[in-house]
Length: 220
Image (cartoon, rainbow, N blue to C red):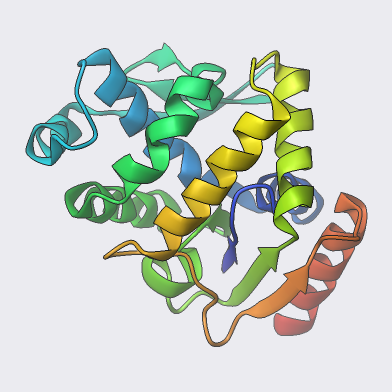
């Protein structure tokens, strides 16, 4: 079974996906983390986001793994733990541009499909229900007021020790929204058959309850 949860930054999709995966024993494949790993490689190789050919050339040498250690989800890039680094300010600034490169999108979508083969998974991103898994069993699209989304991300950053002001976070989210919605491939948009949920005035538990109900109704 494939459950696809799409939406912009700060809509709650990452947190709620983790909750649902625990509640319903679904495998959580963090697709956003795969693009962030590519962004880390871009930074490590001192490339600019405009150098698309050079970035595409990195892809075959990138190995991404998700592991659970001490009951925590960890992300490894070429056998190095980058769980914290992929959430850094430097990565957040370029990830939307990196993920907009056609070769990166194609490569990562193929990787994500392989990761999900033969498994019951829940995946969150921006184009899971429209591009990566257009035939997903359940499709959810989350959104919220942009200022609420920025406050959520700012709070997350504080908890993780990421040094960004609220204004920086808001500006970053507005720019990412614009860029994500105008990508040539895998643009951020609601799939026609996705259930829309406005999370602006909802707690994460309320969102999780609603999604769990939708999934259970679908697989009756």
